[in-house]
Length: 167
Image (cartoon, rainbow, N blue to C red; front, side, top):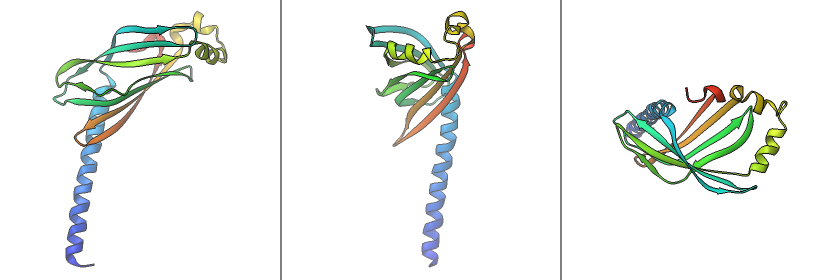
């Protein structure tokens, strides 16, 4: 291997390493920022029937950073006592301005009959009614954040009980 080839490999490796480090640091900063700053602000019922329930959920996102965040895609998977219930999602690009509060929205589409069938297979289905606040809730947030020419996937699991969710 010639010294010119070695220089090219060293320079290329340095650039690649620098980009990887930058992307990792940005990922960690965005993950921490997004983890704590979403609050549901309002709901709009789109459709209600026995087999089809559609809801648009609006959330306020507080961005304390000097960074504009472009969400290319949002997905929130919801589990109740370990049972997958449904997901909220939006494929619409939404922009969160720096040092401000922005309203984001996601769609909820579910089949109520299917959800009740899933919940009926729980060990103690009546505990949903008698002891609602102690039920385990898990929310897995999956975001695609655009940064320049790159889209960075971020996954944030959050577990709580219904009684303490969001506190």
